[in-house]
Figure 1 (cartoon, rainbow over the protein chains, first blue to last red):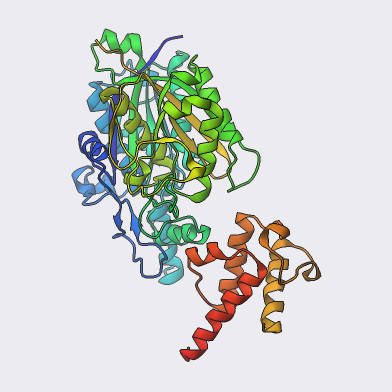
Figure 2 (figure 1 turned 120 degrees about the vertical axis):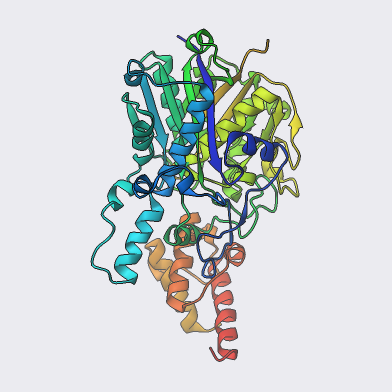
Length: 405
Length: 85
């Protein structure tokens, strides 16, 4: 089977509006979490979010096109453009049908949907914007990437709540590895800051009022984030043949379903997905040198994920650094796995593990080798990135560092 | 303990758990009643709607029994009365 190289990265999120800015802030332990500005928080129990600040759609889309794209689809296109430029790929008419686009999104065009419902219910207007449907559809990110870059190959969207982007990247990885396509653009995007959706999250009682402190004893929940991130995948031979920069490789993908409870996680499902990813990569658990955790900062997830990591890694967990970058870029739901994939690939490449910030106190329930508050230098060859979703759907990616010359 | 308030709370817990109110005592803990995280947020939602109040997350987390709900609610309702709300 061909090896699958990562040759391009693109990102826009609360921690940075391009890869350079994101990585600089990540390894310096900066927080992208601030007081929510796009929504009036006076009627919310929480005030914080990781929004993309000072984002001007007009810089990326001309007037006519801007109207067609919800914020979440814009983030998908902005990230895909950066990734494809970074990869130095031009999509020729011959290559175009051999390129796949797989995007993840959990909630789609929330901002547009909320605006439409406000028109109907609050303002008693008789109609909504005629483009509400194409703005809201969850596949809008994939569709607009294809239109923007002239890609005519297989394109689809995965929607598995917080695992969406990992499922997207995993499926794209398998498509490239099996030779179904030559190149894939894969990732996720999300823009969940609408009043209606924030109220829904509030009612779940899993959102922290201010800070996200994954694995910390005083953690009190997740903090929502937004953004988009995309990876360009192609066979290693193809990448080397055209002299592309290889950031690393995707080497394994594992999925599982808890089949247990819609919101209460188990350790068995996540552990099974981690084992599958490790096995798909033909690795041993002891090969894993870093885990970018799902680490939402909820009481339940972090304890359960810690148990799952222990179940899979055993005593090797003592030696395996774990961090949750959600403490900095928030939980961007269907984009989370893609943002974390960028963080994981760069950690492998640069030998620096971005930290879990706002960590104050160890929790015996989260007995892991945690990288807290400050980045840690470490050289390692393989890493996992975990995503676990409400509904009990788990997706884990395994990455390998590019071979050092 | 206000028996009317206790009955109302027990009624809400019973309807969320879809069991007879007779099977629930004020002393019952959530663990004893098999109340999981989803039941908890459903109960809190019903209580907030019924009594028109807002229960913060940290307080909600500290409630672990029917008695706990009743005491917390009594406190809320009293402070609302004293404010003339």
